[in-house]
Length: 172
Image (tube, rainbow, N blue to C red; front, top):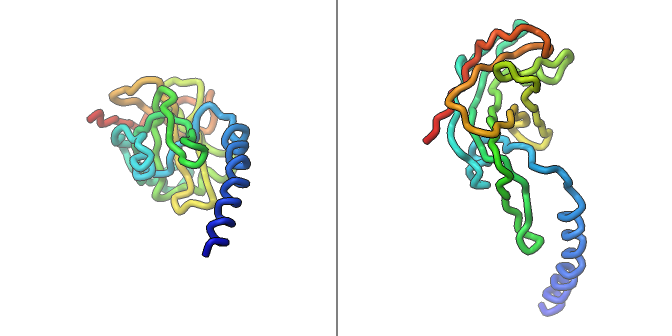
């Protein structure tokens, strides 16, 4: 029994510097990609509030897109306490995030449509992961929380924007 404890201690002593190097030099991004669900955002304690997208069902290129859920989370970065314990550090600002129930394949084929807010000169981000059940989240960086905004789904930034999608934020 004692040899198992000794092997565990040696493994911990060897693994800790490797984990430290990974934490310090591994990820140089300023902030993390968004959570893949509102539940995950709640578990990380960065969930702010719910958002509503209307209509929740859209028709684009003769394919249906259905919004599954939408939420606001604080923009954050994963940091580590005592090397081993991750937590989210608030980096200022917010992210409007939403997932799709249907229609995700549209965003995996060319030409990829863009989600844009009002007259912004940038598009929403799309983050996907093959290792997650809900493997795509669409997000927009926000410096402040608007009450609502108009969003368009377009094929190019110079294309006219119908602003036919309304995002309402439930500030509670």
